[in-house]
Amino acid sequence: MALFVLASCQLMVVLDITIVNIALPHIQSSLDFSTTSLSWVVSAYTLTFGGLLLLGGRAGDILGRRRVFIFGVLLFVLASLLGGFAQNSGQLLGARALQGVGGAIASPTALALISTTFREGPERNRAFGVFAAVSAGGGAIGLLAGGMLVEWLNWRWVLFVNVPIGLLIVLATPKWIRESERHPGRFDLSGALTSTAGMVLLVYGFIRAADDGWRDALTLASFAGAVVLLAAFILIERRSRQPITPLHMFADRNRAGTYGIMLCLAAAIFGMFFFLTLFVQNVLEFSPIEAGLAFLPVSAVIAIGAGLASRFLPVYGPKPFMVLGAILAATGLAWLTLTDVHSTYAGSVLGPMLVFSLGMGMEFVSLTLMALSNVPTPETGAASGLLNATQQVGGSLGLSILVTMYGTASANETEKQIPAFRRQAAPDELLRFERTQQLPKPWSDEILTAGVSAAFIMAAVFTVVAALIALIVIQVRPSDLERLKGGAGPGPM
Image (cartoon, rainbow, N blue to C red; front, side, top):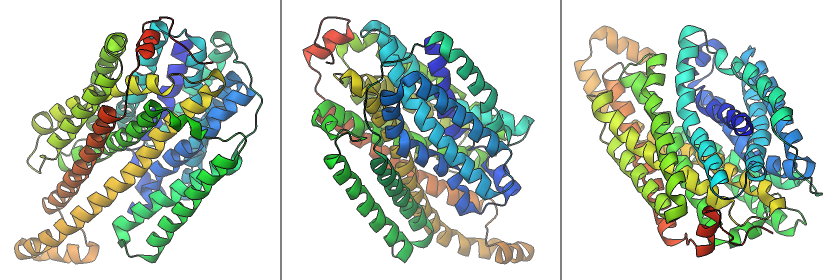
């Protein structure tokens, strides 16, 4: 029951990253978003979520993980309620940012509570396997749930649905989860704020570059500000007596490699969901619920991959699954680059999507175990927060890079399609184009497909980098295998 409560919270937090994706066109028309500003409905959540995860993990260490967990869930519920009632774009973006804060508090404490609730060895391995499967599959579940809620009710229910789930979690937590030991310490607010602001500027710079080019003054200013703030963050952490990010964690090559792999893979999985959602709805013309159902096999295959990794990790260790998982993900993304306007779901989308998902299931279990290996008990919250932050920040930053690739490729394709359209279009179509500056089908499908293919090429590069890091950097010691088997290898002090 403790695992069910913690996994339910993680599912609620993770699926909220993608549950709004299918609802975006309805949100745009309801609250009068521009196309550019609409992307912040996703980014406002992921940036505050990723940027404050480290502070959330530290708060659990200092104040007690169970009480911090309950507070985070309650804040998430309140933000979801406010977002569902939003009457304009500003209110919704504020609520989404507040949701990210609640998720940043609840998610790392949930992972740390697994470390303190379950014994190291096979029992904890199985718990991490369930938790990792939920974390990885929550995105696909969110797309399915979003499709059903939008089609059967309206877009506001993609936010309202969190309210009853969150309240049930809050009621169940005191009964099934015991409080952790509190460790005296200080909150590193300056570190949290500089890192979050730096990442916001970095992501904004990439997104703006997609629209306004790399020479735009505000684009360059955003990148410069990001460099200054992130450099200040590193200096603050080096000088702080109790930093939000203990930099000595990166001294362990396995843990540093794990964070690097997570950064790359998160970028790939965010991109896969985002661009395939666009493709199946705009090119394949799936309805919201059809688009959600199209992603349902992802969750099942991720669970299979996570189950295989959990079962054989004690025998082979995590490194083979890290390498193989990244190779499978790269294969699936490379396969997706072959999609075009004549592709079908069964013939061109389902196969590569399943290959990608199998690799991701293997990865998330292995990465979770490796990130928390040999971490002293007082720092498990910070370690889990850093792993989650790497996932969210990697996803946000990676998606912004992929959006830049998409924007460049689609702009180039537009320049090629407009002359062909002018030669073939009827007079009324030409008038409509001059008024809206939007090409009709099938020209718009060609443009979108070209951009999506370019984004998948870059996503495949990310996964290849992850495979190389796993192959070169990760080194599993005999003592690590002993702990995975429940043996007497040296544990955290």
